[in-house]
Amino acid sequence: MHYSPGAPILRSNNLVDWEMVGHSVPELAFGSGYYLDGGQAYIQGTWASSLRYRASTSTYYWIACIDFSKTYIYTASAVDATWAQAAVIDSCYYDVGLLVAANDTMYAAYGSTNIHVSELSSDGLSEVTSKVVYESDVGYIEGSRFYEKDGNFYILVLKPGSPSSEYVLQSTTGPWGPYTIQELFTDAGNPVPGCGNPHQGGIVDTPNGDWYFMAFVDAYPGGRIPVLAPLGWDSNGWPSVNLVNGS
Image (cartoon, helix red, strand yellow):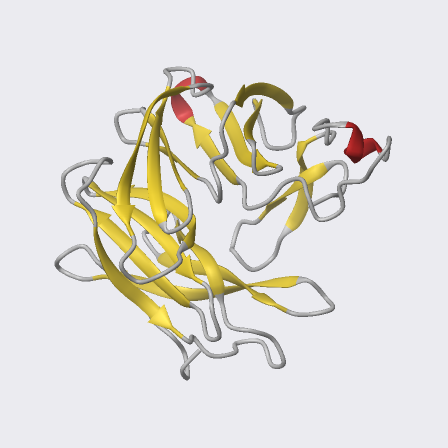
């Protein structure tokens, strides 16, 4: 979070073997505390960011809220190319999930308990409009990840706890909702012995049509370890995670 350069990028061809290829944020230029000039910014910086590729402009976008006050956007022509700060939005997109929709419009889902969606400008660098699309009736939620599939829009969210729960918000009428909620799972076990439950995950699809849920487990003091599980879809367009031996 507080390390510079920040927002490391890893690349994989099989979702199992990963290599470091660069950093989305070449320098944490977010204030004097990040340079230990009259203060410090320990455990601040790049929380819960989102990375997306926009084919129409051959551009990679990285976005995150910094210091719970402003949202920074960095762009690059390739993940291993030079990244540069492209814009700052003067509000916090907390735990943001970026989406490039099928019609090439860019959206961001974010927030805690009340989940917002913002439409971004044609260049993806400023906010056009924003609204609350879901007011939680399951308690505190966060960690938005935003997707579109077969004309439906999905926001994955996390309900922290012990154990934690993952939920899916689904809209069949567009990115602005209305959204309905369904539990994806609660207490997915401990796929890595001695570690916590999988949480704050996202969905990945492969070129050959396979779908997976990828999350992380807390592995103190080693950090966070990524975990993977097969994911399927039912006839109503709801995803389900296929756990192996209960985890």
